[in-house]
Amino acid sequence: MNEIVAPSNKETNANESSGLHKDASFETLLEVEKISLSFGGVHALDEVTFDIRKGEIRAIIGPNGAGKSSMLNVINGFYQPQQGFIKYKGNERKKMSPQIAASQGIARTFQNIALFRGMSTLDNIMTGRNLKMRRGIFWQMIHWGPARNEEIHHREIAEHVIDFLEIEPIRKTPVGRLPYGLQKRVELGRALAAQPDLLLLDEPMAGMNVEEKEDMCRFIIDVNEEFGTTIALIEHDMGVVMDLSDRVVVLNYGKKIADGTPDFVRADQGVVDAYLGVSEK
Amino acid sequence: MFYRETGQFKSSYKADQAIFPITQDRWFILFIFIIAFLVIPLTASEYLLQAVMIPLLIFSLAAIGLNLLVGYAGQLSLGTGGFMAVGAYMTYKLTTAFPEVNIIVIFILAGLISASVGFLFGIPSLRIKGFYLAVATLASQFFLVWMFNKVSWFYNHNSSGTITAPPRELFGVTVTGPTATAETRYIVALAIVCVFALIAKNLVRGRLGRSWMAVRDMDIAAEIIGIRPFQTKLIAFSISSFYCGVAGALMVFLWLGSAETEAFSINESFYVLFMIIIGGLGSILGSFLGAAFIVCVPILLTNAPQLFGLSMPIDLQKHIEIMLFGFLIVFFLIVEPHGLARLWQIAKEKLRLWPFPY
Ligand SMILES: Nc1ncnc2c1ncn2[C@@H]1O[C@H](COP(=O)(O)OP(=O)(O)OP(=O)(O)O)[C@@H](O)[C@H]1O
Ligand SMILES: [Mg+2]
Image (cartoon, rainbow over the protein chains, first blue to last red):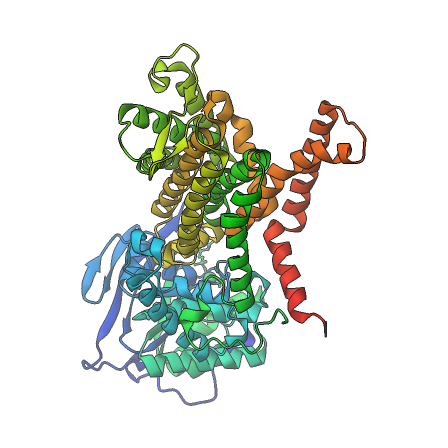
């Protein structure tokens, strides 16, 4: 984790209006306003404010326990913040359930893989289509005509995702039997199958070898470029963050300590200190 | 002709999604159907039908029902006997109140009542899981059986406290009651079980089945993809109880002819649970295999010693039976949770490679 500290020899202009493009032509997809979240005495998030623009890759970084995962959990309605609100697609919301978030086009992956272990790769990815399927129980019982056509239609989309992620050979394998790297890929597939507007990825490359990381980076870039999906990404590997992200928000002890382009953030003294503080431990 | 899927390319997802994608499997299933619908009714003895085939079918139906709940949706239930009782007693009440209504319609209505009872008893699954849920369902088992015992309205206030299948006709043939032949009862049970097995298979390979398995495997992850775990569980409880209810109705009306609440005791719940554990959790085929196993083993234990000219005391047989079931359950739970169905699949995979295992 030390490469993150390197403030880089590149000359970064600190005066460059905090590195943010203050360009009005950017359309904001999500705004996080003064979100505070605590568990008992632990302040996981403390008045965090930032935004995610449509079509960008937004990285969220910070030392362990900084509140990154909690932030994603708040965004997709898994945790309810004590204070603050979130504005998504122009609508302000205070309370939100994961199901509603999903139906509004927010999909995610977890830091610890959260796949359905007893189901095949294909079935896992098909569950990502669940919300888009309309036929009621009666049609499913007879599995004929419209019900079968619907199933086939969604199967085609799932197969596209499988092709895209290059996991054809493991289509019918129960995911519990797959190696870790492939499981991460299947989990991304399940999120992609939902064709989300906002994709939240919690450390998608953690625990992968170099080759797997490269594949995953390629997928993330392709998703962003080909489908225009907005992505919020938590990642510890600073090299990856630099390569992938358009803008970075840095959290430390639940507070936002920096926000800007990768180069700007890397040069920020507060960020360097935060990471040094951790690596000294 | 080798058993192969090589060379059988599926050119469409439709073909790949078929229940039996491999041609040889389809021939095999056709073969089974011919045996079940033609050979058995024409050749089997009254004893074989009454002691083996009819109970096998009925328990298969109950096992499918329980498997939807336990194997697919992951909600452990010990209330099977209670839900079977609901189906049986409601069939009795309905058909004595409306003798002119088609008995199949009555079975389905009784199943629906059983489904709503299952829905009610599924509500605790909102809060409790696993072992505690099993205990809650156990309570429903005892409550339901107690209620059918105590409230004489359910058995039309008769003095014996039993419900008896009255004669009912289907297409001019008597299918229930003392005058119905074993062949007719077998055919009716077979037809009903085939239809409901097909429906169950359709459910588990579609959206609902995937939601059930998702909730079973990880309900938190299910929520984030938009599945509502509680609703999904309640549907599982309802549909499962529907199946168990119809199975209970068939048990009295097509098999036993008459019954008391004893027939739906906690033992019944355990037997059906054993069936799905031995047959395979999360498998429709496994429900049949498990039911066949549990129905046939005691009969084999009774008859086998005589074939060798030995005699075995009844209580020893019972003990062997219980020990065997106990051993197999532990074996399958630890070694092969997918049960006989998985062993069958492995055998098929071996066959696929035969005669060149490399
Ligand atoms: N469900 C919870 N209950 C109690 N405390 C929690 C819970 N979730 C998070 N926390 C606490 O909130 C703080 C932030 O945790 P979070 O998981 O968001 O950190 P993170 O930035 O994702 O860290 P990491 O890099 O280790 O994943 C931690 O102190 C953690 O212990
Ligand atoms: Mg985290």
